[in-house]
Image (cartoon, rainbow, N blue to C red; front, side, top):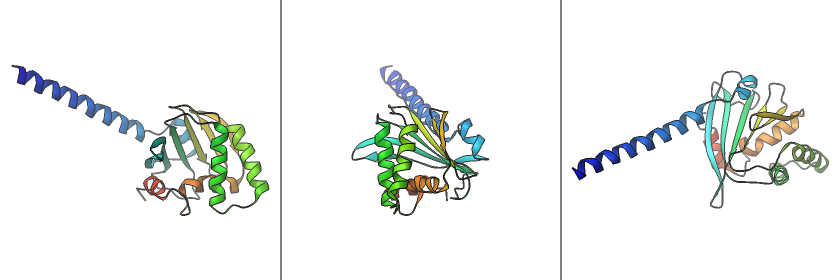
Length: 182
């Protein structure tokens, strides 16, 4: 009798865990409405957790038309933060990564940093920042699903998303995972 109850309990626990994993995967595959508005036929291209040292920082998801990313077509990169970060530090880190990509115009970098500082809030665990590269090559930024602002500069858009998607990225494993269906 005890053995049967124990086996049934194990089955219920396993079923519950399976449902949690399945629901997480379904949610990861769903496309936010604000992405669908800018990225026609948006589907997930790839997904990966960005970890710094041993801390999970954010879960990144790339969306593109029909799940096929092209740098000259609209796409979106959603970052689901797993820890709190200062918005100003997010902007500064973005600029540092752009420098690593080879951008050396300090006046332009300073202008872009000011724009990002104005847009990026401090984030907490569970906050989401989504960057959308529009068909006109502008960058729209959504904070927890609400439009925070737009940077209408094609060079910024290219440089910003190159942080994750360029072959020169400082995180090649993350890039590979984001582009996994390519």
